[in-house]
Image (cartoon, rainbow, N blue to C red; front, side):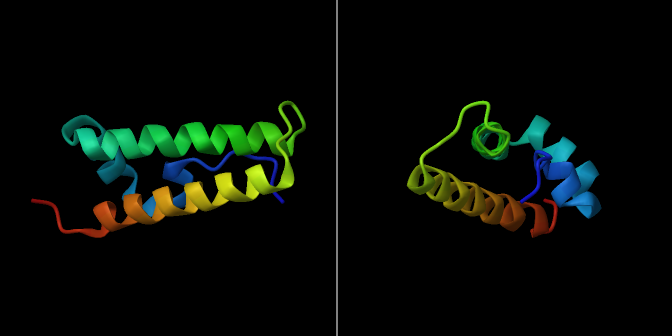
Length: 81
């Protein structure tokens, strides 16, 4: 378990420029990124015992983060228009 928050640019370093571009140009992508960061922050705060979650709630948050990350990766890996 890592006590460092996952950031999109760290998770996808090869897409740093594309992440910044899509945050500005694509409202759907920007919303996915915001949702990812919000869920990720909740998980991080639970991991460091600032706002602990019940085990099941944390598992569900991790699954939500994974689904968001998959959707974000799908958008990042598409060829730019």
